[in-house]
Amino acid sequence: MELWVLEAQAGSRDAFSALCLHFYPSAISFGVKLCGQLPIAEDATHNALIRLSKTITRLEDPAAINSWIFKLVRWQVLDIIKHESRYQALQPSDLQQVTAMAEDDSLTQAIASLPKIEGQVIHLFYLEGLSAKEIGNVLEIPTGTVKSRLFRARERLKQALVQILEQE
Image (cartoon, rainbow, N blue to C red):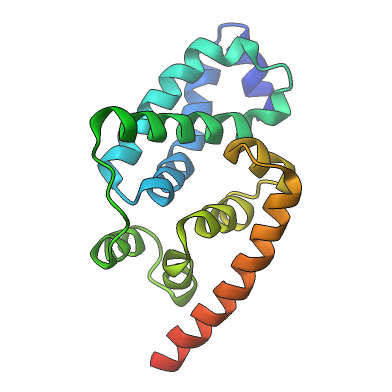
């Protein structure tokens, strides 16, 4: 991954394409988790990758590419919501669409039922493999806050899983 970043910084289109292909699915998924709407997530991801093409040379640590991309996606989602005034709270019908996009299992349902911020932290930590420090960078919050949100999210996730499994 870091080699692709270095090559892309040196001007390699192939390396940049490889980065985009690698991060595209997880960036879309994170965008949906942020706003609950696939079209906004897709637009934000496209905008983020365009922005990445213009700013990749500023990335000093190639190992930070994960948090860099997720931060770009987050900023783009917030910009789209702000400029287009299309944001709506996540509704149960939206949860079904998000759940259908991912594997249809109890864990996915439980994550989708979490409050927005806790779902974002769980998504980035467990599904994207980011560290608490990287998540803090993406969400622009202190690492300690990430850890406390992870703790609360795990507790709520346990409760949600128990409820879902009891229903089955």
